[in-house]
Image (cartoon, rainbow, N blue to C red; front, side, top):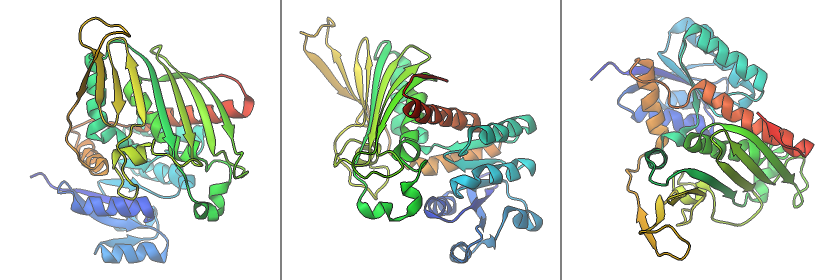
Length: 344
């Protein structure tokens, strides 16, 4: 086997700890260090029996990793990304790649100019189910795709909002949750041309939205709708339907519907509905379910990051791709504020 890729994880919060665990378990990788200025971060490094550093600069004085996974707070993603790019170290940055479009553009352009690999942590694209869904769409099995619908409906309990920043602008389900669904829809249906959105905070009255609906126009001509709410008790969300994160109860429901001229598909079940012979609303349906292997997409993302560092693959979700998804979310927020259609 090739020499293991030496990775450092910046940030030892909830997602950082998951990355640390997966890097340690991945045969292609070796956890070189944990970078986090807090005593908790130092303790996590000690538990993992790896070196601890309070900053990226301190780590670079001591030794150079082959790549870094940046799982720090959103506000410092760009700062940490710029540090890595300046040092020529490939970086996998958790979503969102930035909290500001201009800063994100600066980061992506610098990485592209220097030829430093930059990846965005939209790990759901790595899910074998999503890969299979993309394969089915691209194969033409469903005919020409005309329409898509995505749902993120669930209930966040009152104690979730005890943390003040979760009640403030920029922390609502559009930015924190729907960004994943938008990235998935871009992966399945291509780039987005325009959006129109409405928001509401009728229940909690916080500064941040709790419900939103979005009309989506794809460059391919596909039309879509997306609805998101963290104030309804419901089983229709990625979290509840895929079983990807064991923290959430798994239901046998769906979160996306994709319609084409020759058939339609539900996600994540990958149930495909078509007419047996003549296409007509009076004809009986054929009902199939596509098979796929189940594997943790966070592990697959780390594995691919190692392959990118070795020069064996190109990023599945590049920094540029992460930035384009962020631009859509920013357009959704602007549309909701202005009340009009926003062209990207």
